Length: 355
Ligand SMILES: *Cc1c(COP(=O)(O)O)cnc(C)c1O
Image (cartoon, rainbow, N blue to C red):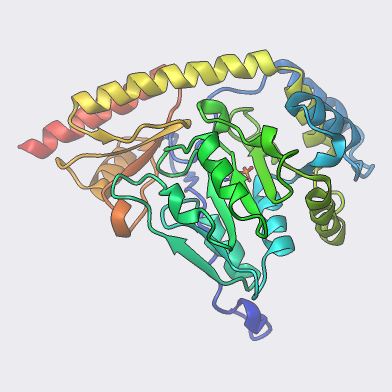
C-alpha cells in the first residue's frame, strides 16, 4: 500500500477471481465460462466495430437497449446495460445502500457482495443458509433491509422459486431487493416479469455465462423506470461509455441468436445431469444445481486435496477455503468430452488415494 492510498480503502479486501494460470493448458472448469464459442454472427458483429474504435461508443446503448427490451419484454426505460453484471451490481449498492440503509445476503453466496459493501462503506449482514445450503427465504420476509440474492445461488447452484422471491419483494416494500440472475438460463425462474408489479425490485443478468460473452463484459439490469434512472445517474457519473463498441455489437448479435444459446444451455443441462449421476456413482454428494456448475463433496478426499490433485492433472476446479463449504468444489460444466476427462481424473485420484 502506498502512503497515498485513501484511509477509506485501507481495510478493503478485493474480490479474488478464479485463477487463470499460464503455466500449462488446463481444462478450465473453475470460472463458469461457457465451453462454447459465440456464433459466427456475434464474432462478425464485433469485428465490424473494430474498424470504428476511434469513435466513442453510444452512451445510450440505443440498439442494445432496444433489443434487450424486446427480448425480455420490458420497456426501454426499464433496462440498463453495463460492463459485466458486476458493474450494475456495484451501481445498485452505490445507489440504494448507505450507512442508514444496510444490506443483507446469504452467508454462502457470490463473494463480490461483501466487497461491494466494503468498497462503498455499507454495513452488511449475512444470514446463515440452512443445513442443506439452501437459502431460507422466510428469514428475508419482512426483514426491512436491502437484500441481494443470487438466484440460482452461487456457489451452491440451488434456486428459490419465483413465488418465494416475490414474497421477499412484496414484504419489504421500503427496501430494494436485488435478484442476481447470472445463472437463470440454466433452469431458474426469472423475476423479470415482476418488475412492473414492484417498484423495489431490481433484477440483474449477464451475457457472461449462457451467452458465451464472459470476455466481452456485458450485463443488464431490469427494474422500474425510477430505479433504472438512478442507476443511470451513477453510470453517467462514472463512465458513460461503460459498454464498448465491440461488446455492444456482440450483445445485439447475441440477442438475435437466442435459438443457438437455448440449445447450448440445454446441452449444458444434459451434461450437468450426466456429471451429477457419474459423481454420485463415485460416492459424491452433489447439490441439485440449476446452474452451469455443480457443487460437490465426498468423504473419500478433502475438497482442497481433490482440487490440488486435479490441478496437477491439468483440470482446474474452484475450491473455496474455510467455513461450511471447505470440503466442496465448484465444478463448471464444460463439454461432455471435458467432463469425461474430469471424471476419469477424479476416478484415478480416488483410486490412488485408497491405497
Ligand atoms: C458470474 C457472476 C456474475 C457476474 O458476472 P459478469 O461477468 O460481471 O457479468 C454475477 N453474479 C454471480 C453470482 C456470478 O456468478
